[in-house]
Image 1: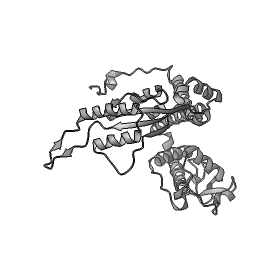
Image 2: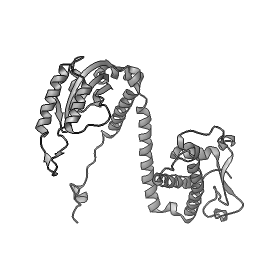
Image 3: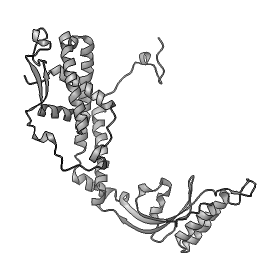
Image 4: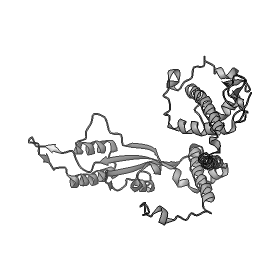
Length: 337
């Protein structure tokens, strides 16, 4: 006897969804740990026909009425889940497709069906508690399905919208190559031999050093050399040569207070830009604009998010909710009885 128990399926779906959301994802094992699959091993499910049984629950009668004798466990009937039915359920529940998770689901699902079958025999599905939970579950699932549908719609960004966004926001895709000198706000304290820090390179001294280095940078001195001097003065010298080069920088790649460097002319050196993290000096080396093909995915994601927000707002905007504060309380404080 093929088929599924309608109420049992719904309960199984809800139960598995709750259980699956609390199970941590299994770590990679075997040859998949490196992200590669063993081509020599074929999926054994490939040879199983869509209408072939993949789960058979012996003694479970799918269409027996609650009052019939065969409603209890019987050796004369069975419930069969075909490959097509099983894979559709896995798809709907978004169960991970790895072999271990599929086996776990194959073990748990028949148990859900049996428990649901027994619950129907006892009339649990007729109880007010069950009906109320079922009503709320329907509302919740409908809401989730609507969100999924809206997300799918929002993801269908027209090509023209992408091209228009690129043209209308061209400055967002400016990219520049810079050189930068970083001067710390304060130097590492030096010891006078008695453990007392000396203040010869205090914050004021580092600020003066930043202005001096900026003047020398504007005069054409090498940024690598100047950066090394800044680190030496701050007591941060290391074994590696400083690298002040910053290639293909976008506005979003710089702190908001530093974005003004995009207004520099080629070869121009910025004033000292100071903030809580240090003092900065920039030199503009070159500029261009990223091609549409290079930023198309980025624009598509931006428009997808905007479309999703707009679509959700269109659904929610016409409705308002009035809350009885005498019952719920205000400002997070419970109402007094």
